[in-house]
Amino acid sequence: MSEITIQDIIKPENLVYEKTKLMTDNALSYCPGCGHGTAHRLIMEVIEELGQENDTIGVAPVGCSVLAYEFMNVDMQEAAHGRAPAVATAIKRLWPGKVVYTYQGDGDLAAIGTAETIHACNRGENIVIIFINNGIYGMTGGQMAPTTLPGMKTSTSPYGRDVQSMGNPLKITELVSALPGTYYVTRQSVHTPAAVRKAKRAIKKAFQNQLDCKPGLSFVEIVSNCNSGWKMEPVQSNIWMEENMFPFYELGDIKVDGSLLAK
Amino acid sequence: MAELRLMKGNEALAEAAIRTGVDGYFGYPITPQSEVIEYLMAEKPFERTGMIVLQAESEVASINMLYGGGGTGKKVMTSSSSPGISLMQEGLSYMAGAEIPCVVANIVRGGPGLGDIQPAQSDYFQAVKGGGHGDYHLPVLAPASVQEMSDFVPVAFDLAFKYRTPVLIISDGLIGQMMEKVELFEQMPRLTDEEINERYPWATNGKPAGEERRILTSLYLDPHKLEKNNFKLQEKYRNIEADEVNYELIDCDDAEYIIVAYGSSSRISQKTIKLARAEGIKVGLLRPITLWPFPKNPIDDLVKKGVKGFLSVEMSAGQMVEDVRLTVRERTKVEHFGRYGGVIHSPEEVLEALKTKIVGG
Ligand SMILES: Cc1ncc(C[n+]2csc(CCOP(=O)(O)OP(=O)(O)O)c2C)c(N)n1
Ligand code: SF4
Ligand SMILES: [Mg+2]
Image (cartoon, rainbow over all chains, first blue to last red; front, side, top):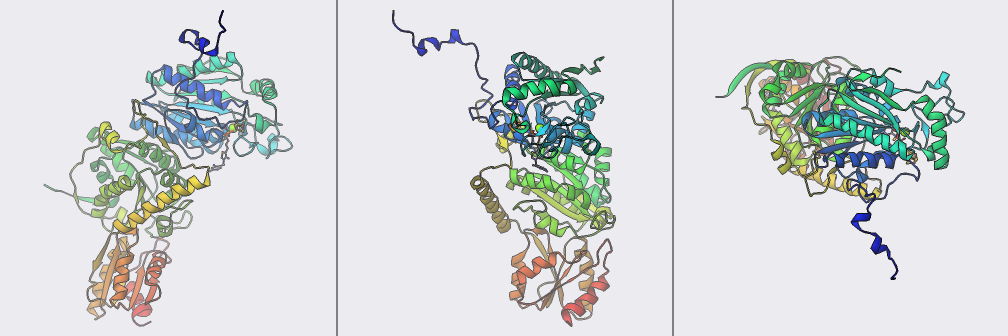
C-alpha cells in the first residue's frame, strides 16, 4: 500500500471547519489567549451566515480592538473613543436597509462613551452593540475601568479598587436593559467551546433582530479576559474570570423580545 | 421664478440645507442658533426631500453622527454656537484625518467659557488654525448677510465633497438672528444611493460584491505612514489655498487705507467707509469670504500698490489681525480695532479708530 500524504487528506469531504472569508488573513494584533479575536470571528461568521457581507457597516472603537477593521472584512469606520453609538446611529438612519453594528470595550462604552451608549439605546436605534467587558483598559496598559471589580488591582488601582474612593463597578448592561429602547440584552462569554456556541447564537439573534426591523437596539455583552492587563497566563485568566467576573457579571439573557426576564 | 422671503439668518441656513439636498441634520440646541433645528423640525423635511433631522444628546454626539453619516457618502450637516463648537473639535480632527466631508455652521457668541449669547467673532483662531489636535485646516466660509447664509450652504457642500473635508460656515449671532430679504435657490435633488456609490468609491456603506472593503480611519500606528497621510493632507491644503480663496473688494481702487473685516463687522465697516469718504479719507474694504484659505494675494497686491495702512476690524480682541500682519510683513502699518465679549462696535467707533490708529497714528 502506498503511503497517505497530507494532500490525500485535504479534500472537500473531509472538511470540518473553515475560517469565514469575512475574517481577513491579517495576523491578529491581540495577545495570545485574549477573547477579542474569538468575538471578532463570531460576528463575522454570523454576518456571513446571514448573507449580509455586502450590506454591513461596522464601527470600531478606541481600545485594543481599534484595529478591528484590519480583521473584519466588511466596510468599517474607526470612531473616536466612546462615540461609536453616535456614529452608528447616523449610518443606520441614513441607510436603514443596511446592517450596522458597533464593537466596543468597557472603557469605550461604559466610561467615556456612556452618554452615547445610553442615548442610542434609549432612542431604540436599530443597531447591534457588541460590548467586550474585560474589566480593564487593555490598550493603554491595564488601568482601572468602570467595570473593574472591587479590590481588583490595576495600574491605577495598584492596591485594589477601593469602592469608597474609586466608585463601584458599573453594570451598564443591566442599566441599558431598563431602557424602553433596548429589544434584546444579553451577557455571554467566549472562554470555552460551549460558551462560544452560546455567544454565537446570541450574536446571531441580535443581528437577526436588526434584519427583522425589531423595535429597538440589540446589546450583547461578552465578559472576556485580558490576560496581559490582569497579569496572568491565559488559562489562569479564564479560571480567574469564572471565579470572579461571572459571579458579579452573571451570564445569560437579561431582556428578550423587548421584555425583561424574571430573575 | 426666484422665491423671495423675509427670514432670519438661521432660518435661511436651515431652508438652504433642505434645498441643497442635505441627507441628514444632527444638532443640539444652543443660543443664538436654536432656530436652525427648530425650523427644520417644523418644516418636516423628510416629507419634502427625505432629509432626516435628529436632535442629538450633545454636540459630541452630533459631530460623531456627522462622522458616521459623512463617511457613508451622505450630505450631513450640523450647526451650533461657540461652546458647542468647542465640544466638536475632537470629532472635526478625526474627520480631517479620515477625510470625511460635512458642513458645520458656527453662529458665534461671546466667550471665553459660557460667555454670553451676543454676537462675536472670537472663534476665528479656532476656526482657521485647525481647532482640534493635529496638523489640519478646514475651509471656512464667512457669510455677511442672510442671503449668504443661504447661498453658502451649497458652496460649502461642494467644497466638502471636492476635497473630502469638513467645511465651516462661521457667522455670528447678529447675522443668525437678523431678518433680511432672501432670494431662495431652487430645490436640488438629494443624491440617490446609486449616485453616491458612483461618485464616492471611498464611502463605507456596504462593500460592493467582488470588491475590497472600505475603511475610514485616522489611525496610522507606523509614524512613517502617518507622515505620509499628513503629506497627502498638506498637499490638499495647498490646493485649496491655490484654488479656493474668495473675497470681496469694496472701494479699494483709489483707497489709501484698507479696512479688513468679515461677516457682521464688514457690514458695519461699509458704513464707516461712507463716513470716512465724506470727510475725505480714502478708505476701502477687503472682506475675506474664505477666512481659510486667507486672501493673502489681494492684501499683498494692495501693499504693493502703496496702501498706507490696514485696520483689521473684528468683534474680537484681535485674531484675524495676525493673518493680516503675516501677509503685510511690516511693509506698512497694521492695527486692530474691535469691541468684543458680545459688544458690537459702531461705524463711528471704527472711524475714530481708523483716524487715531492708522491715518493719524
Ligand atoms: C479621548 C481619548 N481619551 C483617552 C484615550 C486613551 N485610551 C485609548 S484606549 C483606552 C481605554 C480602552 O479600554 P477599553 O475600552 O476597555 O478597551 P480594551 O483595550 O480593554 O479592549 C483609553 C483610555 C483616547 N484614545 N482618547
Ligand atoms: S491587552 Fe488585554 S484586551 Fe488587549 S489584546 Fe492583550 S489581552 Fe486582549
Ligand atoms: Mg477593557
